Image 1 (cartoon, rainbow, N blue to C red):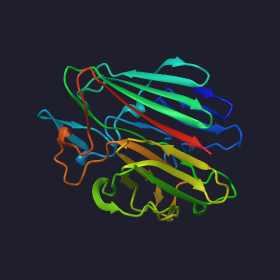
Image 2 (cartoon, helix red, strand yellow; image 1 turned 90 degrees about the horizontal axis):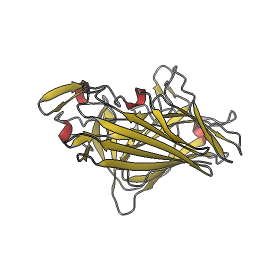
Image 3 (tube, helix red, strand yellow; image 1 turned 180 degrees about the vertical axis):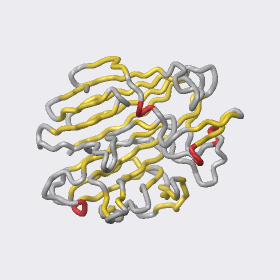
Length: 292
């Protein structure tokens, strides 16, 4: 486990998936990340690549061939190398080197950097296309935050606030059998109170949001996830159908891409929200988690 820290935060990051496993706030004593309890969901903050969400029939077509790939792709399950580390920053790198061609016919180099600045963790992604042709992919974050943060609180004490990108329309989407449908343009982005039934129909998904805040109405503690320029965001917790409750975490997921639409052709080049990267080019994106 790799540890970086400053006067505000101590962060534990696993080489497996370059996944943040723990964020401890030194000034208020709170541990902000989900524990990864497999009784609910065994991950904490996986990086989703080269797809986000589920493919229609768990497969796609590219250049006349069909490939099988499970939800969210495979990058979350590879071992990264530490390329560089200081007390407050660490960079991870993974070179595919033909390992995944049976499910994804492109080679790539993925770099993930974490950097602390006061009470914020800055996450930077780089995807290098090492092929001699264009490469199609999606990438997303999936951090899960402990909710409630304190023992004397409950889910109902928390709320979510959405900050839209300026001068853009916000589209809301819904999932049906893990596939995307447009729900409609959102004209009034009101505060969303957390409740046991909020995620009964899976994630809340929006386009053109720049920031999502999850906070306690009682203590004011919580997290701001800032991701200017990302096209989509998902907000999710695991709904427990047996007793009508939700798991004790909430995920805030900035995405470049999303699940297949219900009318998807299955062609990766035509996939809704897919990114295209020229030969030798590098995709870069950054988001910030601020722990209050």
